[in-house]
Image (tube, rainbow, N blue to C red; front, side, top):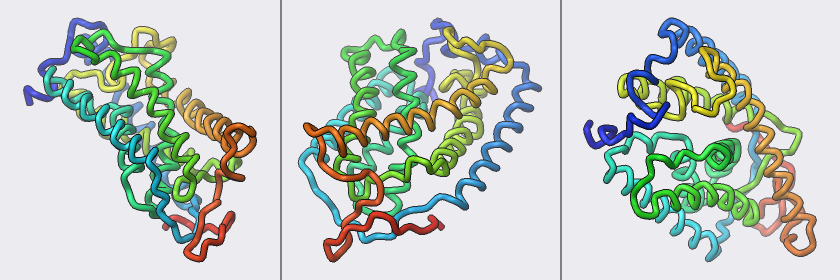
Length: 285
């Protein structure tokens, strides 16, 4: 496993190492993990039974812009993978922003389907990742040529891609503004990924994956409860950021005269006969 994490810089505070790994009381870590996972599973079951998707026949809308974005995002992600292998820090590819980048590459490449719509709606709730990356940049360990530049470019493009896909429309549509079920569904998956998967890898490797072992230097909620506080404030940030992003996209794509290209971001999907469906939907399962 040397290629995965032997290059992790343990001299950077709160990055890795035994001091970070021992930050939390092991008993309390277990208690808060059980509590948070129980909450996440309950939220998942509640939201999954209520989420809906439009019932339409999707028509592929091929655009040069989508192909160009696909090439660009693949290049950016490929460079990140190269950096991680050369610095023997491949483990960092498990951090949510890299996963979100991979999801966006899938969305740009996949053929139209209900699954694409579902994944698109889920990923719109993961934009807290690039926002926090801009507000609290962690580039101390990026020392290879262009490595810091790619950090900023990657996180910036994570906002560009969903906006462009909303502009394309079709399979890339969103739920009604008042619908919070997709927000809850996405957040439950996000929490389970952190506490069931990232934490399981972070503890034995002593690598602070997305701050699951110890809080960031700038974390205002530093202490044994910092993860509980994170679950709470991200439960607010994720849906609020999602709705703000959709409001801004809605304004520029459907109202502002210079950039208006459509009438709605919702269920405007062309069916096989060329008609437009703006309302029919059914449960995902």
